[in-house]
Image (cartoon, rainbow, N blue to C red; front, side, top):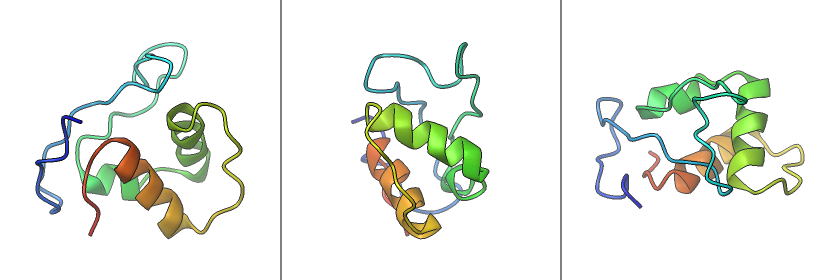
Length: 83
């Protein structure tokens, strides 16, 4: 995955990773904010975290995981290291 070699700091620049169905999360119909650094993932609203998780987990139930777990799942899905 393209983000695996990025550092873990907030200054690490990440590339937008398509959802498992090939959709670009930043384009219609999703229109989500791009995740270009770790702080973007950390600062997602609860609703946008859920939308990213559903897109990266191919519609699987995301349940009510703790926020830290949700952030970690998104970071892994985009191939980035979390702190």
